[in-house]
Image 1 (cartoon, rainbow, N blue to C red):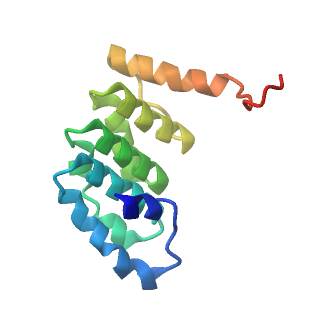
Image 2: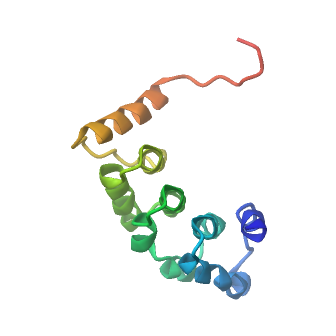
Amino acid sequence: MQALTVLAHCRAPGTETEAHLEWICTLFEHDSPRIRAGALVALSRQSWSQSLRRRVPVERAVADPDPNVRTAAYELLGRWNDETSTRWLEYGVRNDPDDRSRLAAARRLSRSDRALPDPSSDPVRRTVAWVRAEHRTPRRVATGWS
């Protein structure tokens, strides 16, 4: 877990180091949801690598029983910012049973300037409303100055 946390903050410089990261892909099968989520987070910094992207089991990650793994998958997909990842994020907004995971998918969609899906249920309606409200609310730095 410690190695994955460090890798989540690093970006490998190029394809010559890609082989050194392949071991992370074996962790998608790990018994621990913390390790599975950590592997997704670690690879999110390596979004430039198409071959590593192909090794991520996206369908399994967004269907993982642990919401932290699904949230990590949505964060990873948000960094990819392509049509396939957009469809998976939309799927997450519409179908994820966990409020926080659904919110992570909606935030990533919104950050990539993609349209949020039309609300099809009350949980989706709340999630979309929350993300839209975040965009309307000016943010202040918590420095004590107003």
